[in-house]
Length: 154
Image (tube, rainbow, N blue to C red; front, side):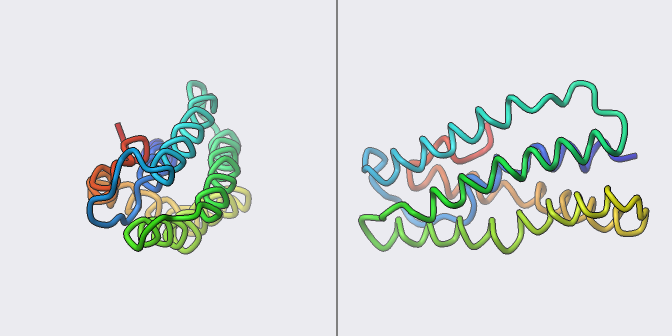
């Protein structure tokens, strides 16, 4: 019943790492190198989350909590980057805004719903995660446009 929402949540950060970009930028700029490092390090952290034996709702909640807790430092690090131009600033600002307004709240909602075992709330939270996963294609394209190849889904 909850396999797709958990999969969506586990893939979601790959989409958020390339959220809402901007026009072309220099891929060898310090900003883009830093953004790529942040995204690569975050992906590595997500890879360490064991999702092979997720059967219970509590296991799903634990995996989503780990994912959320791994994303928060990436958002803070991205927010602290100093963009060299307006295009990079737009990418950074949109990245941070989307994570804070959409991605992290959706992950939080799933964790709260799973902890409460409220089926209606859990269904709504799962729906939010699926919708966020499905919106990742544009994010991937925008990440590539600025040269932040590590910030999109593979």
